[in-house]
Amino acid sequence: MKHHSPAFLKLIHDSKQHIKEVSTEETLSALEADPQAVLIDVREESEYAAGHVRGSEHLGKGIIERDIEKKHPDMAQPLYLYCGGGFRSVLVADNLQKMGYTNVFSVAGGWGAFKEMNVDIEKGK
Picture 1 (cartoon, rainbow, N blue to C red):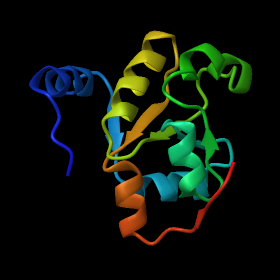
Picture 2 (picture 1 turned 90 degrees about the vertical axis):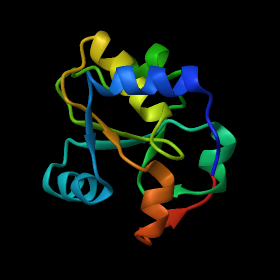
Picture 3 (picture 1 turned 180 degrees about the vertical axis):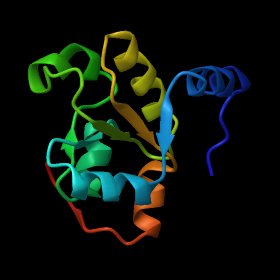
Picture 4 (picture 1 turned 45 degrees about the vertical axis):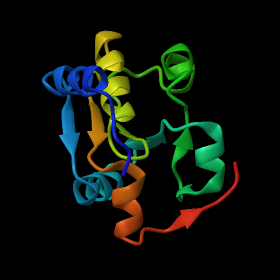
């Protein structure tokens, strides 16, 4: 388990006050129930290529704010974000809400939680 700095953890804690966090189970149910819902992996490109939830799209934390409106212009579309452990996705969710997105969720536990569920994964881009 990674040890994160106190300032980073405070930033995460502060951002969590403003966003909606959901479980992997809630995420998979929502994706199945709503064809408009999208699962977005916000990890680094190399992490995504090494393995990701089948059907997820990649918009890394470094570029998502720049590119999200091109890929998903409907600011009410449900966007489910995951990263490695559920921290970076919190920051991205907070930023997307600041940009006007109204239906953004951070997946608690991220990639690690999905792997524990034995979800269908794929490798490569």
